[in-house]
View 1: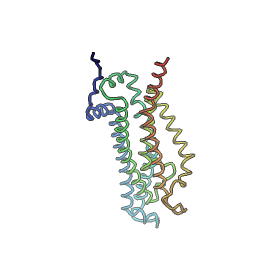
View 2: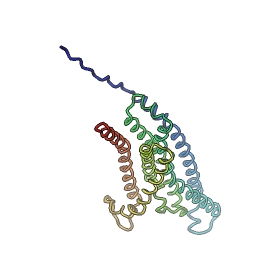
View 3: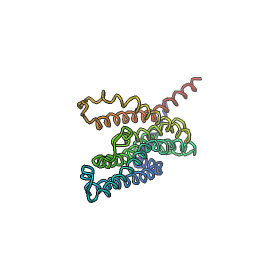
View 4: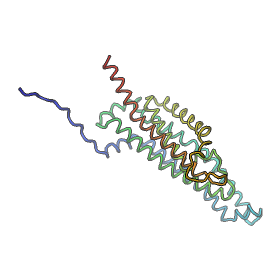
Length: 284
């Protein structure tokens, strides 16, 4: 007597380019919006930096040192305009990560649950965990690239303006500069996706992302930044030392680690909870 054994059919291999195409199609709205927003910010930052550069070419340093000169009025006017533009752009850059998390990350998965598209996407032969990991990698890479470009331009513009004693870098400007800006943006994006994955409703996920991001910002500003000096072990902590870049590295590294942990939780925790719930139901 022979025993007939049944084997499950092998899962078909899904080409990586098909997964990428689905991810790009899912996030095309976010991609277009981020590119447009980053383009506008880059143009405005470049215009402000060029005004400072033009003021320097008119003898701005001599005007500030001696108080008189042939083009001092024009140079001072250009410097004031550039400084005001940079102050306004600083406010915009501080808000950008929250907008990315609330309007870019939070609706991403919740919208699919609300419209029922998730039923279609799960019949394409792609494991949900793989698709979600690809979504986080692609979206995070786009957010990092665009906000890094904006942050570098802001560093350049503020550096030129500081040379002319026009724009002052304050603690509130810290998160708007590179590399803190892309780190905050990545963290906010992953936090938004996590809220979307857990709540399955767009508006509650957006609200949770905003509240969570605001709470983390307050925690970092009030409780963590005062202790950055204890973490900077590779440079001198003398009062004359410029700790701007070491503090930027500390904050960016912490946010990157937090974003990775949130991403892993977003991918695996709901799956583990679902398996646990099914196991309890089967045991009952």
